[in-house]
Length: 194
Image (cartoon, rainbow, N blue to C red; front, side):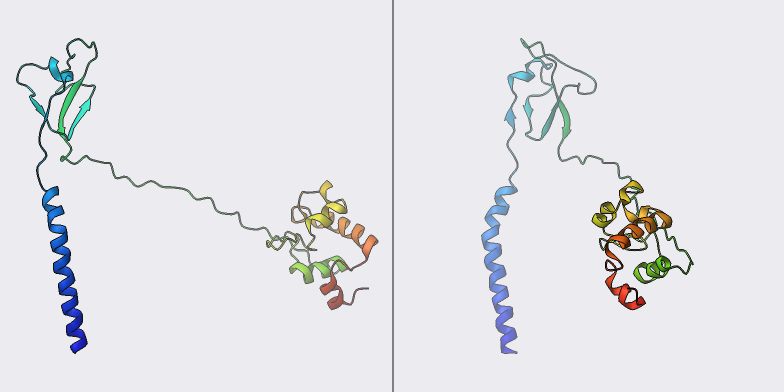
């Protein structure tokens, strides 16, 4: 309990000190602004229409209530708008519908054959010949782009998953002729391939 009372007392003292420090700043900012003298730019106004100009008045090139004037000796048309800055401006508040494109659903191309390539594809990509999981390997037999291009796959498609099942098998046959089933080590061992 005494600790709580010390904390309350400390917070009270800090509040009083803060108010004492901020009071002069608040009083200074609450003073009204003095009017400034009209520039020679306004000399062309009718007598007595505007004698002083508040600092917050807006300057524009159209006329007050449609009227315009030309300052003496200048040839330019100028005027002072009567709307002061303390009048709130209106801003239209409208909802805007923004369409966010989403990725197209990934296609799945399977084949229920029982050949060695379909069995290998079932092991590598669950039989999905259009597989593109983002792991750097593509298609049913999970070719890397380098291997795909190295064995002539670029003649069919830029990426293996974009080629047909038959085109992927043609490239796989070329790869197997050069290296056997070694490019698929895990599934080779699992399926007992040479």
